[in-house]
Every structure is written in structure tokens, then in C-alpha cells.
Image 1 (tube, rainbow, N blue to C red):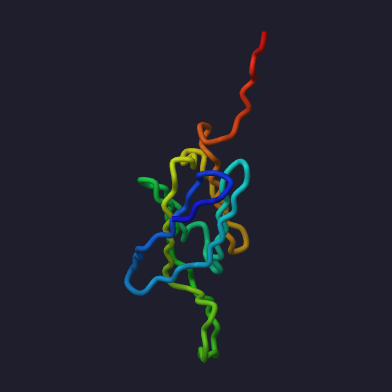
Image 2: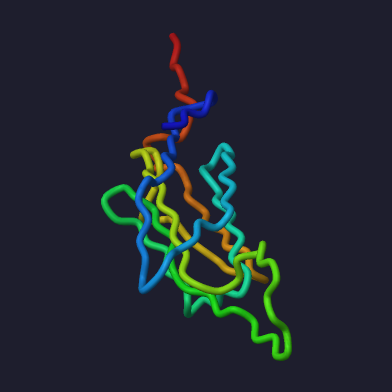
Length: 132
């Protein structure tokens, strides 16, 4: 489990893979932390919003789906390093500091962005001190 030095927001990389009629791949993912929460960015070339599922269940964020490989008529693959097409899956365990109800996702030009704000109780807040 990874712990950020600035606070207790934790994300754990999933250890399970799910397949649907064949092998699945794990897309590249980066996770960034800000004062307001976490942002997950995943490379999903060839994926449409219809072919994508982003879910949070029992404290686990999962990204799964299927991408269509581009049809290149007259070409025979010699080496395939981009892993276009096929099923994909990633899972991350979230700490209680993530507000699951306020989590949002968007897909633009093959890049998935998932915004996971901190839960209100996990945010830093200033407490005014009254004095006499």
C-alpha cells in the first residue's frame, strides 16, 4: 500500500485480473495528488465511452472494458507494442479519505481522467480560536 507523505490518502494497486474470452491488458495509469484529492490518468487508445466501465465498489476503483483494434487492410502485424484492441482491466483499493460519491470520470482523445476528491472529513480545515 502506498502512503503519500502529505496526508493519509492511499491507493493500492489491484492484484487481480479479469478476462473476457481471452487475455486482458493493464493500461498505463498515473495517479496525482492535490490538496483537494486524487486524479487518475489512464491511457486507453481506441476506447470509446461505450466500451469503458469505471466503478467504485467496496472501496475498490476498477477500470475495465474493451477497445477495438484499428482495421489496417493489407497489413500483417510483425511487432505489436501498442496493444491496441482487446480487453483491459485495472483495480485500485481506495482509503476512506476518498469521497466515492463525488468521484467523476471523463474520456478525451484516448485518455481517461478520474477525479477523486477528498471526503469532507479528510480535508484540512482551519479552526478559529476564540480568546478573551
